[in-house]
Every structure is written in C-alpha cells, then in structure tokens.
Length: 244
Image (cartoon, rainbow, N blue to C red):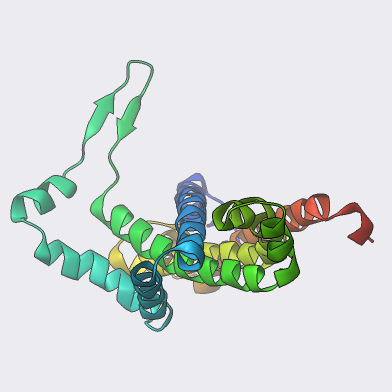
C-alpha cells in the first residue's frame, strides 16, 4: 500500500483515468478512420488507373519510410505555420455546439494533428496488409468469377475482397494494437493522453516507477482486450471447415 498509496489518491487517479480515456477514444477513432482509408487505398491500388496506383504507392512509401514522430511534428508545427493565421487561431480556440440534450466540443488543434498523423500512418500499413491479403487469394478465384460473367470490379468486390479481408484481418488487428501504443507519441505535441498524464503524476509525486507502472498496466489491458476481440472475430469469420 505504501508503494501506490499516493497514486491511488483521487486527484492522481482522475488524471490517469482521464488520460486513459483520451487514449482509448483517440485509438478507436484512428482505427476506424485508418481502416476505411487504408482499405480504400488498397482497393484503389488494385482496380484504379495507373495515375491512382502511382499516387497510392507514393503515399504509402512516404508514410512507411518516415518516422511517425516526425510526421506528428509536421502536422502540428509545419501545417500550423502554413495555414492562414485566422484559421490557426480559430482551431486553437475552444468551440462548443449546444445540441439541446448535450454539448459537442470541438477538439483542440493538438488532438486534430494527432488524429490526422496517426490515421494516415495506420492507413498506410493497413493498405499494405490488405494488399497482402489480396495476393493471398488464388488467381483461379478471380478467373472463375470472370468466367461466370462478373465484371472485374464485381469479381474483386464480391469474390476477392471478402477472402482477402479474412486473410488480412489478424495483421490488421496487429496494426490496431500498434495504434494504441503509438498514441503515446502524441504527448510530444501536447495531447494529454495516458503517457502525458503519467508524466504529470511523475512530475508532481517524483514516483516514476509507480506512475508509468500503472500506465503500462493500462496499456497492456487495452491491448489484451483488443487482441482477444480480434481473435474471437477471426474464429467466427473463418470458414467452417477450417476451424480447429
């Protein structure tokens, strides 16, 4: 009790739980947006024209070959410097929309920058996981669909893509786990997620082990739940004959 007594005080517990809530909300939003954008990029690379394929390949190569921390700095510092000063000031000013039954708060600029940076980073990797899943589908599947009268796009949508998603699902879940961990980098641009909150607790209490130890346990818990959920969905989506 003496080891964690100070950190279990309501003040520090609230800080950690608030940071953990921001981590979970940001991770969920990034995973959802990154999946949609990544699969769209994957499909565009497969069925799009030459220009679209080159654009997607260039985007994926740029994102995958630069550090995520640098990308976050670009979105937070460089983009803010390029935007008109009036727009930058508006983005940095709190805004609230009254909906009658509640209020909708506009996120701070560091939240937007972190969301965009993490989403593009996750989308690039999810697009490659989807592409690997497509390559894992036997060409005979597509050829049979074309022989039955389906157009190339119909064959891709109804035959190839569902099988590719089953193949790529677990690697995509792995990217979800990476996203949860990567949110810790947003503390460098001032986003008050779990690592930022842990740093606050450590600064005030001078108990580094306890502060980051609790944060580590929260990260492990979130990752374990997502991984277990992904495994369960994979087992349910697997063809009946392939289930052990």
